Length: 85
Image 1 (cartoon, rainbow, N blue to C red):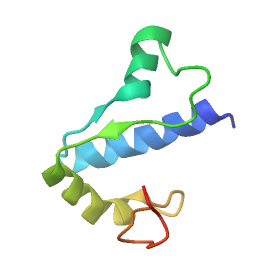
Image 2 (cartoon, rainbow, N blue to C red):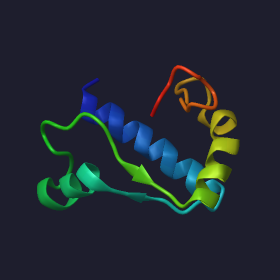
Image 3 (cartoon, one colour):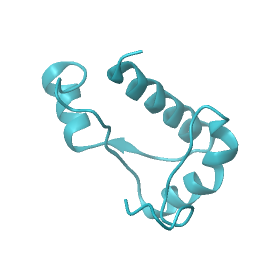
Image 4 (cartoon, one colour):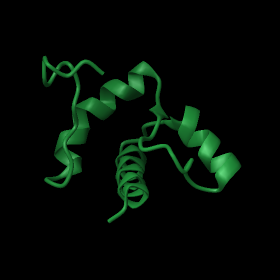
């Protein structure tokens, strides 16, 4: 599976979780530029940029591990002290 497909799969799962929990989010930065300018992803970009307000982020963090399943793992400094992003 190519990187773009993997990123899109993760974004779809995030969208599903946000929809199910009434969490507002938006794509931002390079992800939004790719959507607008390239009708998809920027060819040399290999990540996605998602933003949400703090109250929505706190709900997302509370529910994401349960709803993500075994396929994905959420990484935050609160979960893994060695993770800085």
